Length: 240
Image (cartoon, rainbow, N blue to C red; front, side, top):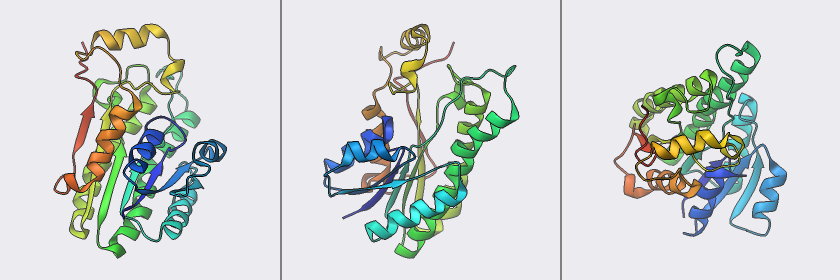
């Protein structure tokens, strides 16, 4: 049975990934900074172990992966969804917030992938699925420049890691969601959501499971010869 780590598992896309994987009997290590929420969601499920992750700390990235791998007894797959968002516009952007966004969304992504890959190499290979954002392609819908830049970095990192880790049998891909109905986007002005829907040929924003199903596909053996890809999950969204 595959041993899988899912980050950002306390809500949104990460939680949807855990639900999808558990439905197929997979064993999961669920990571998030919100450990109380993890405990509430997965209490009583013996197939899910919970672990605290602060993706803004390189030490926590390494330690949480090591702890999860020890609990799972190995590692085949990392699905990394944990991130933070900022809508601060460029005029108000300051260094402290910029550094915090990139520390979690980009630096943390690299060090989580690095820690996971070290275990996968010993196990003969594996798969990593990262989470980017359409903000990197369209310049942001509600997110500010720090968020868009961090997710653009994830796209570049996906391709860099796919090239570097491929010889070790490790595939690296990313999902690139548009606007998704999550606790984060529910705080946005309704006008932004309505404008997004108007520009989306499928006539709605994404649900978390729309993205999770694609992430789980990329993590599966059905995508065994797919690596370095950044797959759009946006309902055909176009930016005028």
